[in-house]
Image 1 (cartoon, rainbow, N blue to C red):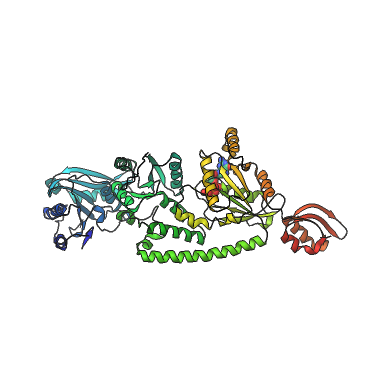
Image 2 (spheres, rainbow, N blue to C red):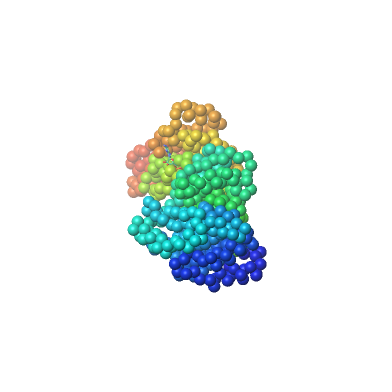
Length: 595
Ligand SMILES: Nc1nc2c(ncn2[C@@H]2O[C@H](COP(=O)(O)OP(=O)(O)OP(=O)(O)O)[C@@H](O)[C@H]2O)c(=O)[nH]1
Ligand SMILES: [Mg+2]
């Protein structure tokens, strides 16, 4: 069987190529002239690369049309402390034997014994380059032996060399360096690039370099200019990056072209955002939503993740729905999308019912909204601490970190306002610019909490260089949700990092808002915020007098927890309390109310 790109190749040619399988290579040789001659002939006829995989016994294990990655060989784990036992011989139809980026990454990822690139011009051999793995700084590296003649290749003590490499893998205790190291590429704005770097960080990917190209026109094949691609390819090699992340959406074919030019995995901003959502999704509903979004995004392009790159497994862009799921045909994907949507619809209904219940209980709703990293989760935690319901609350810390999207699921907790009213405080997912529209759709339902809120606290990071842009981005989403006319407090957070000037300027620029400046982390002005929120909430408290007999003292304690006790007197018949109560408490203790 001939692997790789065989479409449109005449059957007669394929049968002739099949004959290579019957050829043998003597144990101590790299390759034979006989095999090379067939390869070179077809390289000329097809004007394509021809690859042959040979094992250490000299058996031909695969013949393929296409680059070095079309050869099918099993993946070897470095923990086994050996190489794959396979060498790949392939032709370069342009006559240049230089190993390409893809050749080198195939060598290292597949742990080949060797990779030979045979330059072919007009069907004639020019020179041969050989790549071997070697060990440098306890990690797997490569060396390239250049411009050899066939006679020189013949003379090479190839098996000795391979043994040497395997010994040095054992001696140096080589570990697989599977950390993802990225070069980020953008054409939009500096802010957007900075955010992309943050997003990568949130995904545990180190950003080694960032490349910016100011380009009015998008290149249909590579997105960026050809020269830039080369520059990045060079950086990939020198910095030893293993993924390149683009700031904008790429088409499936751009991803494929870039991967083959750069020799490493290429992903775009949307894939990265989806990835973050996938790793952070905590509830079943959130996970379903992300999975749905990922399926939709990938099915619309069925991104290649070049053959070898996807087989090396792990890392960004490969989690979530899982490769297996993506390999199934489009019809299956459509069915899955349908099922997921149905399941989500059901969940949405359940949540609506829950929300209705809560509304009936007439607990006022406060929602924290804002740009990602503004400090919403920190604020929610602090408010839960400061305004805790004493023994009534089960405090549940929100996952908070200096990372984007620390929160994926809206999480609601009860807090006690300073006037002793109970309120529900909801933390929401942070917004980002260029949120893929697949996600806007998917996450609208989690943001629906916002629609039910009585007051919105729009939290902004006052210390950010792009406060204005972030405020606008959030306002846009709020408008889309149809909640711009809700009472909104602009909460300027991180005032500990802001200068007086910045704060003044911010306030001047946002005269249309009620503003409270705070520091969530340093707990500055949290009481001011709580009071402002109380002011904004519809007043649902009623002032009453209650006389509680001394035999029912637990009700006094209950009132202290759940109502606003203004005065307390000890009378003969019991405790007389002047309290502000909400509907629930009113109904529960109605019998004690003194007219
Ligand atoms: N200096 C300072 N840092 C703060 C303050 N509030 C929050 N932070 C930090 O800002 C970072 C982000 O805070 P989070 O609470 O996770 O932000 P978030 O708005 O919930 O972010 P997403 O969930 O991604 O939308 C964390 O490192 C916090 O410690 C503050 O008042 N001052
Ligand atoms: Mg958060």
